[in-house]
Every structure is written in C-alpha cells, then in structure tokens.
Image 1 (cartoon, helix red, strand yellow):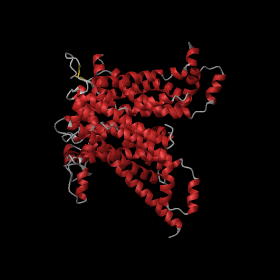
Image 2: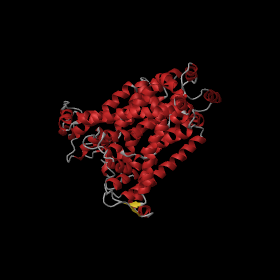
Image 3: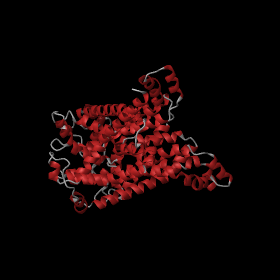
Image 4: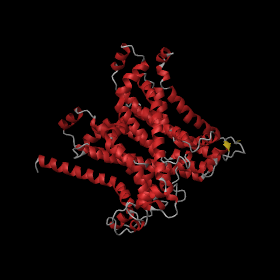
Length: 292
Length: 274
C-alpha cells in the first residue's frame, strides 16, 4: 500500500484538491449550465421545466442585460487602465531612496487587504452628499458639490475611484518587485550612449518589465470584472440600475427575483466572458515570455 | 547648481511626493477611525471636522446592542477552519505540481482562482438547502475553502519549486519514502511559505462577503454580513457603522503591520515569478 502510494505520488497528492474543486466548482457550474435551459423559481412543488434556449433569447432581448454588459466593461477597462498607469508611476517613485521604505510599503498594503465591505462603507460616508468629506474637499477648492454615488452619471466613475484607490498599490508592488530584479548592463550601455531618462524608461525599463506588468494586469482584469463586494456594499447596483454590473444583475435575478433559468443563462455568459478573456491574457503573457 | 545638490533636491522631492501619495491612500482609514469616535451629531456637523472629544459609545453599543462578539467568533472559526482545510488539501497538491511539473493541474488551480464565484452560487444554495446545511459552519467552511485552497497552492508552487532537490534525495537515501520525506523533511523547512499562505488565506476568508451572504444565517452570520446589515437600519448610524468597520479591519491591519514582508511576498510572489 505504502509502496503503491509512493509510486503514484504524482497523482495521489493532488487528488483530494482536484476532487474538491470538481465537487465544489466544476459540478455546480455544470448544474448552472443545466439550469440555464430550464424555467424555475426555486420552488419545491414545481420542478424545473425544459425551455431550450428561451432564457438566452430573453436575455439578449433584455435591455438591462445589455446595459449591465456595458457597465461591466466600462468599469473594468477604465479602472484597470488608470491603476496600471498610476501603479507603474508609483513603482518608479518607490524604487528611489525612500526614507522608511518598509513602513511605506506596509501602509500601501492596507487598502488591498482591508475588508472590502468595510472599505465600501467608509467610502459611502466619504461620498455622502451632505456630510461626506469628498464634497467638503470640492467646496474648499470652490468647485460645485456632487451627488457621487447617488448620481447615475457619476456612480461608475466614483466606484472606479474606489477600485483605483484599493488596487493601484498592488500593481505598484508587483512592478516594484520586477524593477528590483532588472539586470544592470543595458542601463550602463544606455548611459554610455547618452540616452535621456525618458528614452531609457521607454526603450529599456518598460520592455524588461513586460512580464511583471502582464501578470499584474491579468490579476486585476479578472478581479475587476468580478467586483461584487464593493459595488454591493456601496450602491447595490443603484441608483436605479446605473451601477448594475453582470455580477450584481446575476445576483439580483437569482436571489431577489428567483428567475433561476434566466439568471443561470446570464451567469453562463458571464463565465464564458471571464474565461475567454483570461485565456487571451494568459496567451499574451506566454508570448511575452512568462511561464504561467 | 552642482550635481550633489541636484541629487539631494531630487531625493527630497521624491520623498515628499511619496509621502503625499501615501497620506491620500491612508485618508479613508483615518476618516473611518475619526468617525468611529464621534457622536452622530458630531459626524453631521461638517463645520468642525477635528475638534471633538473622542468617546467610545459606538464601540460599546456595537458589542452590547448588536452581539458583535458572536460574529467575530463566527468569522474567526470559519477562517481558521477553512485555512486549515485549505492547507490539508493544498500542500500535497502544490508539492506534486511543483515537483512533477504537473502544469495541467496548475492550470486547473489557476482556473479555480479565475472563475467568478457567482457562477456556482445558485447550485450551492440549492444543494446546501437540500442537505439542510444552510446556516452551518460546515457549509461556510467548505465554501471558504474554495477561496483559501487555490490561494495556498498558488503561493506554495513557486515556494516548493525554489527548494533544492538534494534535500529530498538525501532523505530518500536515508531510507525515507517520498511521503516520509515530504512529511519529515520538506514540510518542517517550509515554515515561511506555510506562514505566508496561511496568513493570506485567513485574510481572504475573513474578508469574504459573497459566499456568506447566501450560506450564512442567524447562527453563523459572519462579520462582513453583520457590518453590511448596519446599513439597512432606516437612519444610518454612521458612528456605529464606522466602529464596526474599524473592528473588522483591525485584525487584518495588525497582521499586516507584523507580517508585512510575508504578505508582500505572498501577494506578489506568484505573479512576479510567472
């Protein structure tokens, strides 16, 4: 027995983990896929009714679905874009001689490891139109006050600001780790050639940092697409439906309206989007020379 | 200006820039802490932001009126149990993936990290209801383990990969089986990796909101759900809300201050290595 285990360690060691993922994730996703072809309201009396592609049809006709698709992409692309640029700049700054670097790095950790629900609620107070510090700040600058989370046009930019605050440090720390491990030789050559600071950054540093940047963007892209805690804790998709991402709409359809079939169809579409986007970014990283 | 003077100027301005940015990032926490020591009237009075005498009423009422101690205990038990289960399942898996280059399995774990949790939330609710496991520690621990385990594997793969192979070989020569070598040689020297992955797993379980939102009930309500419920009271009790937010972030904050090197390594390690 022991000998047999020893011979097959390669397979036996990962087996419990794989079984767990199969049971807790892959089987349930299959179940969602099955439900997406049925009509059901989670009742014990009436069983799920086979409706073929009806749920998908009604989904694509649903304006709220198209809106949530747009909101999700808008939020994700802008948030990740802004925090990538800011993160790289912050990393370049942090790579200099900073007094108390250890403490600075620790404090920059706080936004990303603090409990998202608590973070969301603090920002609700900051954005509060009457007593929030965001408007006090605008007033001090002589600018007109805003409705922030309560305004349909401003709610997504306001949420993007929270996401940028929360996750720019992570991109900075990943890029900083990449910066620290850069080879010295190309820089010496560039100095001999008399390159300017910006030329060195654009032609040497940035290309060498590509794997680190791709890793950071991959992680952020996936997580930003899935953002739930912050949005649910601050706006619950509101005002109206103006911050209802796919994630929130799926939750509302499934657990508030109990439209299990349609919710499942939406979740399968969402799942497909996240997966194909991840595969795309992973293959881009492979091309850039990263291992996994 | 001579070169040395110029460099000193540069150094000073870089430091000022970094510290200004840092203060901007810390401000929301400062806000949370300030408001948690204010009365509702003091929070609503925006003309005087800093001049107030701190009082602890919000903290006292959070514990006496809203049974926060129960929620803290729930969150703690579930985070510890799911971290432990995650280690039990994840450590051998990570070791096999690192040692035998099981890239396919590595990819499966990456997918488990990628898949949106909501895509299996409805089946979870149905299955756990049928098994009468809603509002039990079992259901919550199992669900949180789907967060902790991939994370532990993700952090441990590069850790095991960087370990010299001779260690295991010499254990084998001394007559150990692979399992014996894993248990007696590899695990005992993996302390730093295990600490890093456990801390992060604990934090991510502690912070989890979505899974507890559907699987927790009155008996097993976790801290994030309890804090969120504060919002639904008609008049928002800002002081209480902020005191609750401080209570939920404080443990994570303390862990971060003590273990910062481990946390940075864990959060960025898997990504940088790639």
